[in-house]
Image (cartoon, rainbow, N blue to C red; front, side, top):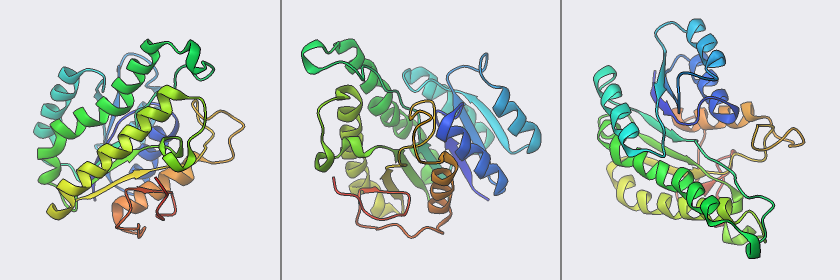
Length: 234
C-alpha cells in the first residue's frame, strides 16, 4: 500500500490516477482548488473506498495553501510515498507571439512550474520519510526542444522549464533513493486534450501507477519518459 498525493485531481488525468490508485488499494490525497465545487465524482470515489481517499483543498498557485495542506497530511499520514504533480493549465493557445498577452504567460508559469516547485518544497520532508519515494511531474512533449513548434508559447515554455526543474531534482534526490521523472502522458481525451485526442487517460494513469509501484521499468538515465517508460528526447 502506498500513500500518494495527486494535484489537479478533480478531472481528466488527475481523476483517473485517483480512481486507479484506489482500485489498487492505495491511500490517496486528491488535491483540488476548492471543495465547494465539482467534487461529486471524487466524493463517489471516496464512498467506494472508505478511509482510503482524502479530499484535500489545495491551490498550487498559493504557497500558503500548499503549506497548509502539507501540515494536514503530516498530521494524517506522517509520510508520503509518491507526489504526482498533475495540475496544469493551457492558456492563450490561439495567440501568436506578436499578440501574446503576458498575463497568460505569468499565470501559466505560476501553475505549471511554480506549483510543482512549491509542492516539492513543502512536501519533501514527508517524501523523505516515505517508502521508495517518487516525484512525478506530468509534463508534455511540447516542452521538449526536439519537438519545438510555433505556438502554445505559455504552455510549451512552462513545460520546458518543468523538465529542467525535474533534471535538477534528479541530481539532488536520486542519490537519496528517490525516483524523479517528468512524463509525457500522451495526447488524451481530457478537458485539456479535447474529444478528438486518440489517447485514453486511464491508460496513462495505469502507467503512472505502474511506475510508482515499480512494475514499469523506466529508463533510469532519462529525465523525461513516455507512458512506456522509455526516454524521450529533450
